[in-house]
Length: 141
Image 1 (tube, helix red, strand yellow):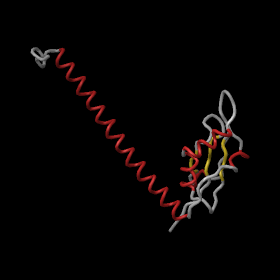
Image 2 (image 1 turned 90 degrees about the vertical axis):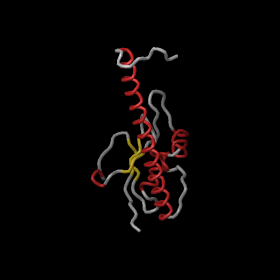
Image 3 (image 1 turned 30 degrees about the vertical axis):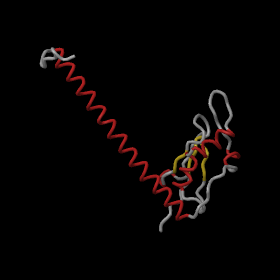
Image 4 (image 1 turned 90 degrees about the horizontal axis):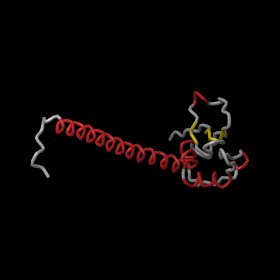
């Protein structure tokens, strides 16, 4: 089984804790006001990224975040974050499952949005046809 170990980048200032996997072509890039989470053989990047973006990850960031105008957190706080530590295979299985479910939910959202757009178009045409007399709406109440 092939596991991907890539570094992560986590926002430090503004929206602290929002995390993404760094694609190979951007490895070693420099980021201002970001926390670079170096790759580790203990965590699959996509799994750790999901942990950082989860309610548990966000809660841990919120506990140490400071600042009035723009929330931020320091690198030394990130080393104290606590996440589950299943086997690499289980991390991959969890990450793959979440990707599949997220894709399924995103598809359902897209379908609903498409249906709403079609209903709005139909409503517009229906109102236009009623106003211009293309359809007779007398007698409807």
